[in-house]
Length: 90
Image (cartoon, helix red, strand yellow):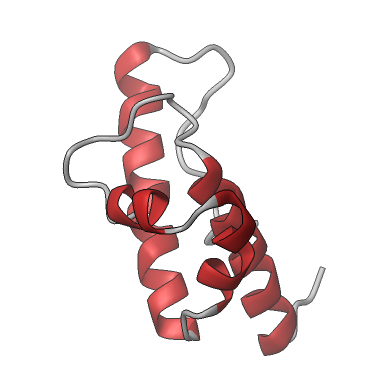
């Protein structure tokens, strides 16, 4: 599937919205860039928080998340996890 720039930004914002709700591993690492944002953004403000980042910021945050997720999944031997898939986040 081909994504336009705006589709990609919308997709990343939507993914970030989910990550602002909670860490997929339950407890985030101490250096998680989303840790403070989760505290600052109440439930009703999470979408507006996710939408405030520009494309470079979204890519940076999601890259950090993807790397962290891959590291943690590999460490616990997550069943079915084969490592980071080709492509960024989709």
